[in-house]
Image (cartoon, rainbow, N blue to C red):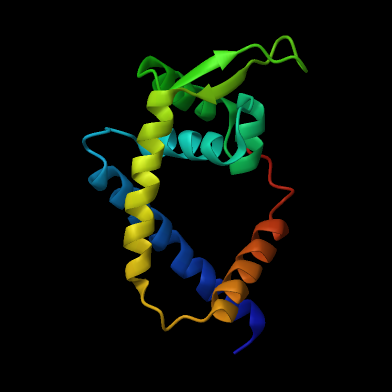
Length: 147
């Protein structure tokens, strides 16, 4: 089997994996009521600190409009807040509130517990190889405009 065929098989797995993971997030967080989009915003801010909406859009290959809707939803629930951006007067920084930090912390803890059930038969080298392949495929699509 050629490399292109094998990589197409990777894409065939990534789509269903992504959609099932989305459903799992939505099913597991009814108490928080976090949509997948809001969860993504909270997770990004948790990992990177305050960011602008355009920065979040670029980082996640999402349109600024979609990210703005998710930020607005999170802000309405007091999970994030807008603060002045010293680097750019017209583009505020979005940061987690204490409530938002607690919500994403609980989600991350549950997700890590679930991922821990994969088992320990996967080696570090296998996981590193998977990350390397997926990263290469993502870079292949770097020129795709998301806005």
